[in-house]
Length: 265
Image (cartoon, rainbow, N blue to C red):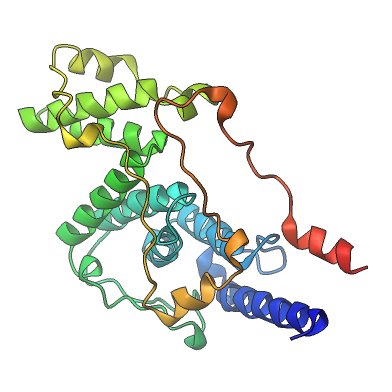
């Protein structure tokens, strides 16, 4: 295949991916301004932006399949996994019946599957949310570590929960990602409440840094959404908790789609 055909094929793939998500912008119920939707970057980046917007507008149940799909790409997608965890917990608060696709979000071609165990009950959604937060926290995402500290460290929880909360608090305070961006979202009262709790021993598996593992998407929607070239899938080497701040990679701020357009001119 010559270069021209290869570029045309890639552009077509990008177009299909964008169309898959843009189709969801046809209704105001999603909270998306169809005249000014999120844009820029690859289909996966667009999909993440779209999920963030509809989640912010109170539609976590519809954003959850996108976050879970994107998180399956593994290392580099910790924020998607964290967002999925928070959305699952939020959807559980509003749960009244098994979740399903609501009109105005996805076109019939998108085939978003809600036939999953964690969409069928309030308990299952809570369990899925905590599982996602644990995955992102173990991979070093500070917001997930903070969220678990709050959830498990809440007043009235059993000793095992409080002990685990103290562990996540310690990992959060030592996390170089948190320190680089100057974040400290855990308040004084929570810290005081956990001050007398003993830290779990170093042998506890929750101390171990575990990078996100890449999964194989089963849904047609997910397969189409993340169908991009390997170097654009956000995969990379995750930071270790002990890494020096100066060795962390710079955040990506370049719109790759714009660069490709400039190169073709």
